[in-house]
Length: 268
Image (tube, rainbow, N blue to C red; front, side):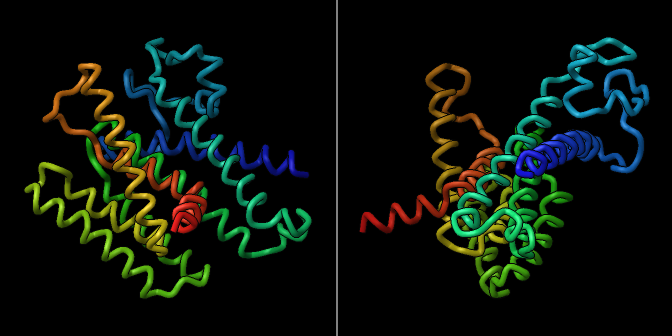
């Protein structure tokens, strides 16, 4: 049964990864998210068998069926990464929260299991969109951030988090990034990063995890930035898309945040 559930989660990840690619492109082009998929190069409408996640890319040998131009590596890579992260979070949730004490069948009857699973998978999906969108276009889409923030407020309420704790975490994150925005006059980060901070606050109402996500993001950004400067690909005045690293920080905090916090507290 575990094998079957893993396959289902994997297929779900591939499908939502494919939808993430479509959403990223249409948000950038300011097009409706409703409608048939098409090749961004030749504009021909794709048929259903051209849209099978990962497999279509392999069978078409990475080229459009109509114009034969190369398809970006972004498409299969995003599909694969989302699928693998979905499986990782599914296994992690079973292993760390439940399987140590209960059978799989009893776990699947718990409403809280599905709430945590939905929360984790949506975090992965949303952060993947933010990562790719900011990496490619240096933009944060509020069309993604605002609905996602509302979603995580609601799901955390269902998970038993007090409403004011969620709003306070969001306010602290907004104030943190907003202050940086004012001090740097918009040169250190963009306005979209402020609202992304609100999203992080909605995801992590626990301050320890919120701080872990932000610190992980800045640490990753520092390492990547220094590496690019040393290698000559960037100069000291160059900008890096902060949303990329905040997305990474959110994923890291969700996976190892509790362990990092416990380790830190143990030191003192």
